[in-house]
Image 1 (cartoon, rainbow, N blue to C red):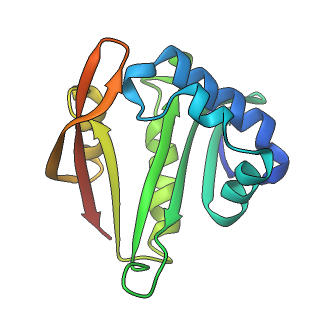
Image 2: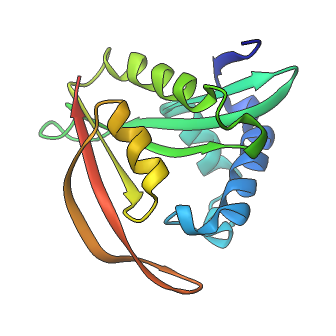
Length: 163
């Protein structure tokens, strides 16, 4: 494997948003947000997300192949938990361990600041559910009709794992 994994900073915003927008448009049914939702956030809000959270990219020869984020929940009663968000791997990176590298980096960081992590995934996305299960996540619920898409509604699986 010739790829590298690194934490993104506010200076990486344009490259991060390009990959994220690709995911939201090319794989729209796999996300709970739309490109319009992302566009509604200011550049400053995106920079804050990259600065305050832990967002990683896996790159090969200068091209970003995969991204994912981690955010710690706020408040004294919930700050022992974190959220994995925004996982996306470009088609040319799939099946090559890119998603595993993103998840490993996120979980390695999460272990230093929280005791459990959560995520949500479109319940019908069997490939993504299997990926998360392989990384130790367990489904603890399903929110019916959670996401309104172009072709109807989709359920969202709620998953977690202890670190």
